Length: 324
Image 1 (cartoon, helix red, strand yellow):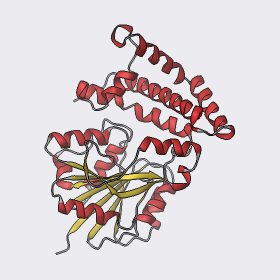
Image 2 (cartoon, one colour):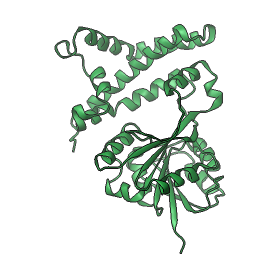
Image 3 (tube, one colour):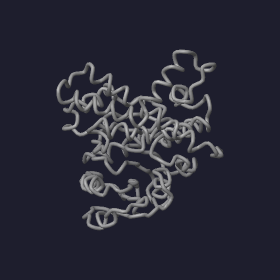
Image 4 (tube, helix red, strand yellow):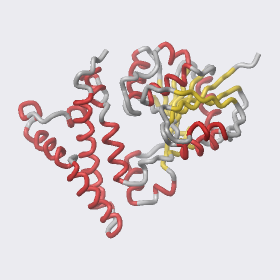
């Protein structure tokens, strides 16, 4: 009897161009067992449906529509439509290698009941730019074999579907793709599930924010909006507690003088004028003096301001949120 082994779930929102490349690479898999791909259209207004319909795919390629905004809701909808024994989550801008599914599957079969996270690298051409080299430094050195870790990433993760159902999937209160994967990993570990990082499962990240400090700051600001929810839900147990402490509202009595001053500085760095000035300085330095110093220092200041701004926006956004 035919048995579906893997369901690959790809949430997407208005990135039809990137999605098309993702699907073309995914279609080249060497995997010989039963598998399927589920693309979740999350309120797209571009030609996403047409792109999916035009694909010549070796296995079933399903299209699901989810109206509730956010990657969490989209991934949950994809998982609900899945028939595979195992789920693999990737993003709409991930370029896989032909052995991608086989490597995940071999791990899942060998280490029953465990989850696996692979590595994502930016495109080679982006790694050669001034900002690309800085981005590369944030990833650190990736080497070795399987390593136990505490988090997952929705761009390259696999797990038994039964676990996902048992844990009720992603928390849909995370309205953007940030924090929801780490939060799911927390609940998984609390239930006794072991998570491994496998650097051999490497994908390329066709990242919209990977090429410039301007786009990267915009994304960091957006992603930081969910950190207050994480903080409200888990308090001091939040793995992002350091971010919460460093970006919450300034309080001289609680923060101490140094942190209080740094928070007030970041409020200026994160303002519209502050971000404009910092990004312009970075762009000028990239052209006339693209060396590590002082350019990287300005990168870090711009990012710190963007994170602070996003966190403050999240505080207002979730001020009346009832955290369960």
